[in-house]
Image (cartoon, rainbow, N blue to C red; front, side, top):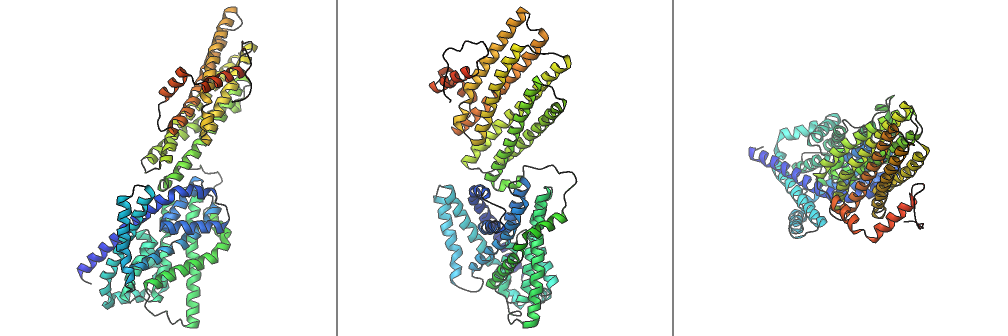
Length: 588
């Protein structure tokens, strides 16, 4: 083989892999916005999972990318292990689509496939250069990547053609007709390239030499399917147990499928003496073998999906102590919409934890419980951990290309996680006040306890409104938060005035006053953070973010809606003995 041909082959390989990468990235961007909706409809029905895996891999043109994505989904909790089994099997079958597309390169000598690459390139550059819509430009990149891929494949084929007369090359493939050596060679090639589609393409390009027989090609193709598992196995390092089990299921599917298929093939060949076995394989023949194997393995193992799952659990057993769940996985950055969805779900968990911690702390003010006090401290540590992980994750995610909707979501999350964490901090402050009451044997006067119950009811409502508006992106509910925050400010102010009056009359003591002042300050700060959360939702939805400007405008101009809601909450949360005037009716 001339040195020039070697350089052409290496250059063709580089062009081929580059084209595959361009096409795959563009297809991922196209699929990203749809994956979130598809995931919500997945069930543990293996057939539905199989169809999802097949279609996703066919769309992405990469089983490695699809299986790594599934590992990330399982690790992040977006998908469970039972759902993943059918999807993994579908991914293997879907990978065969690429081998059929590569036959369009005209490797078998046909003339019409030769116009596919230039035609795809021409249409692709028109879409990419002259269209402004994102999906049209992405479609252009897909076509450009596909044309570059075919060009690279053509270069490999043309450089490999002289190998037909090379005895060493023929001897090498004769040796690979040994099923064990063929499987190992195919597995190593795919493990190096990290893509079974690329390996299949190279094998198809080399088939133009006419020296590769079906007997040699079949074990190599089996090995290519096994080798593609290395990507998912590497991806699963450092993940939770179910994610590692998902990668193991991918490996077991191909190992068991290969063993049964080769045993059946060589047994039938021994009995029937297949006439095609020693014939030269073509690009179409390679695609056909690749497809038949994966369909055979799917038909064989899909009915036994539970057995595959149990085998994976047996290989990677549960620990006696439950492992700490890793909720945020940067593998999801390949599909930003799902990464945003996972971050939102984790933020919601953080919000609910902060709320439950706050309610526990409120109850301690009235009834001390040592076990609950320890739980509050543990919850606050967990809330801090949430903020650290989410903050880092969202900052890294924001550096990726995001849709307008996802960009808004990331902005809201970045603005709100700090407020949820501060609510947890204020719960600990309430715990400190409750501990002081308990340790010093202090009892708040009946009047103070009655007033506190009114304030705490208002704080509970503003906390619920802010969290529920965040959960459902409910702007109407978010707009109810600021009038209630205004009411809480007035309640705190009035309670401080009443306490001063009781101090002067001797009804309250200074020690009680210190504790009460801390309680009131923390309740007021909690309401402020709830207001920040609601304002973030409203402002980001409007395409801007300026909390000070929004609040100043609301409180200086006082729109009719704000005044009505504020008046409603003032009546609802009037302190005992307060002059309320005419009673407000209805709901807001």
